Amino acid sequence: MPRPVRPTRSPTSPRRPSGEAGFSLPELLVATALTLIVTGTATQGLMQMTQAQKTIWNRAEMHSGVRSATELLQQEVGQAGRVTLPAAVTTSGAVAAGGRTFTVNSVAGMFVGEILVLGAGATSESVAVAAIDTSSQVLTVDNSGTGAGTGVYMAHTSGAPVSVYGGFSAGIVPTSVANGSTGSVLKLFGDVNSDGNMLYVEYTCDTDNGRLLRNVMAWNAGAKAAATDAQVLLSNIVANPGGAPCFIYQEQAVATTTFVTDVAITLTVRTEQRDAVTRQYQYETKALLNVSPRNVFEVWELASQGASDRVQPTPASITGLLP
Image 1 (tube, rainbow, N blue to C red):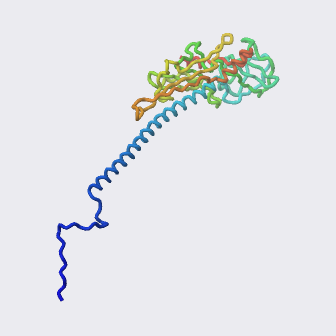
Image 2 (image 1 turned 180 degrees about the vertical axis):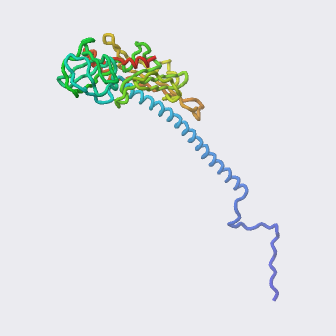
Image 3 (image 1 turned 45 degrees about the vertical axis):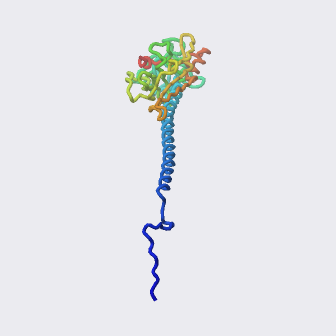
């Protein structure tokens, strides 16, 4: 029996749809457009976040720099005027009443004019250093407040302690002295690190070159080191609003002695880079209005009450570093 012949399908006849037929061209175009829109929106958001992060980082760097500088300024101004000896000092022999010279185990940190306390307790007395023999460690002294040529009042045994108290009246160098502090240069000295070593420190607010310099050296240095880039404490300093000085001093006088009892510090800085969004520099003004050098303040109070034997004079070596 012959097999039936199946009708052949014309090549032009339409195919039946199936699950593997894929997207049509219009569907593909719509999907691509939607993908581009979503991707573009996400990319734009990411770029905005990146720019915002740059702005935050730029300001954070500026804040960090000015905060570190002002914290150091606050600490050293607060410690200015502190007088100290680097090691414990005792007499190396007995001191006779009326005597003017005696030997000690160390003269480190001492200077002519310094007021020392010889002895302890009921046998203690204040003496002013008139001369120092560094080779033999012999001190020549006057009884404090009595005048040159007057020896110690009481006898002291060997090993009697020799101490220093009070503070420097010019721990913050007043503006009224020759080569003193100014609105752009703060000059101070004393044991600012509380480690037994006295230092002389100069802060220079150089707005012309955009930097805050800190020049530090030993209190008895032979000469002041020249300013270098290594001394830059803060960069990108600019002039304060209204032309305000970087440093303002509150000064109090007792007789012929001037004490700086308060320092106001104002610093204005700008960011290192321009803002990523506004293309402008960002600025910040940091002001510390009541920074008190507590050692100077305390000796000012003592001097106001007539206790002059705790007011330490300015060492000659410091005077030589001021210019």
